[in-house]
Amino acid sequence: MPTNHRVKLASRPAGGLPQPANFEFDAVETPALTEGQVLVKISYISLDPAMRGWMNESRSYIKPVQIGDVFRAGTAGQVVESQNPAFAVGDYVTGNLGVQQYAVAGAGATDPASPEYLVKVDTRLAPLETYLATLGMPGLTAYFGLLNTGQPKAGETVVVSGAAGAVGSVVGQIAKLKGCRVVGIVGDEEKAEYCTTELGFDATINYKTENVRTALRAACPKGIDVYFDNVGGEILDFVLEQIRLHARIVICGAISQYNNTTPVKGPSNYLSLLVNRARMEGIVVFDNAANYATAAREMAGWIQEGKLKSPKVQVEHGIENFLPALLKLFSGENFGKLVLAP
Image (cartoon, rainbow, N blue to C red):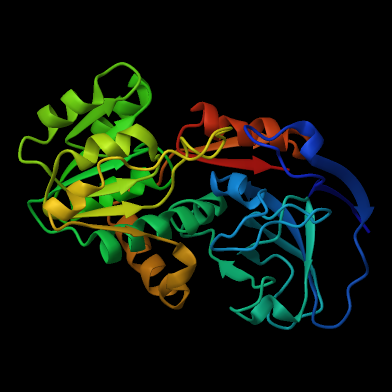
């Protein structure tokens, strides 16, 4: 049986960026399968900002990773051995199989409510890594967060932060499909060019080189109807200054705050929600699990019609590079969807 190299949580970060000492690397032999089990060789591991929150032992929308456990992650791979009639050797699947090279899924592989649940995917329709991007959790987060929570209407102005990322790039494109004016906030000129020329955004703002408050006024002269927030911090405050009546603020993430060594900075301009009778609401993609298939089919149709482009997929290699690759999410070095090929 093949040797499985794994990454386990060894300790919780005390604050700031996670450190090498917070993780343990080990190698174990993959076990012989019993009836109902499936062995998956993992091809890609999804790297997401939410992983930082899973390291903390605090109340959240999902339980933290426990000390000693293989670190949680969405994955895509191929069945290499099966004792489960629902899966054949050679099937491509996605599932939450963790940061490791191989994973065994049991009877829960066919149960959507189980953490072992596997979804068969068709690599003839899209590359395998796309099922961790546009047709995976980032794309579904964008879809449900914008359409169900943001509820954009044709002619409205939609602003999205982290606009070149795996979620933001899909948000902006769906907003354009719905007839909106779209402004993306990014961290460098290459990302700005990508959003406008490749993805069709109407304007971009580089928060590192521009005055965001002033740039928002110029890019959104009628104000902001929908804001899809991936970063939090002062950019959220600048947006709240310029929202329109009945605006909708979608809170997807706050990557600027995840590694704070001081308390999280919340919005100081929250009274703008009162003045403008606006709404601020969080989006957790798991709440929409019953409608995943419907959303994925619609987005796959948009891709086939050329109306939706998958974000760039940046592949890092080697399970030993898990932490350096993950940290690229917090330094802005990543571009599009970041995955690790173990």
